[in-house]
Length: 211
Image 1 (cartoon, rainbow, N blue to C red):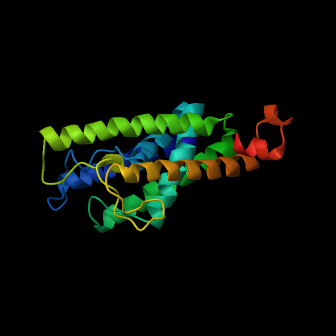
Image 2: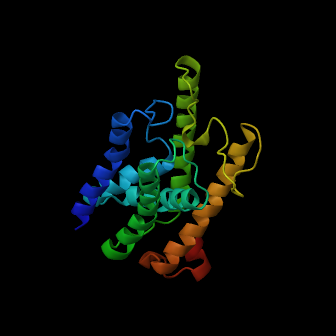
């Protein structure tokens, strides 16, 4: 069943690009259409992990997929339009990246490693910084009708979200990092509360939840 779900998710990854290619009213551009937001990356990774069952991939999707999925649903920003299929695809993606890590944890025994949230934060910081450079290259040397803003490293997302202040670049990025850490700690507590590591049984309960 897990592999069948993986195939379904892989098909979901190509639905919107095919739709954009076939529909002349939908724009398909290097600046907006690549899966280089955390949500797009996690949607690919949960499909991969249906087959790979990799612990680090699980950890990455459990933290960053959950954060991206929840905030994407609560404060959506549709960068490629709001056609009916785009809306269905958007909410399907963001729902999937929330619930698939839960399935992997509850049904397949995946657990968080100690201080895993710190490792994922470092990975996210390095990855987003690299994407920021990619945005700069696209916008500087391959300027198009729209600006590349993957991972919102070029300008702040236009969303009514308490973690996204209306600050100029690059100051809003510091708020995004602070919000990322706060969200990751909350997710760490929830997952650890449900499935703490056996090797940490000797630690006080509050330390089990935070590490």
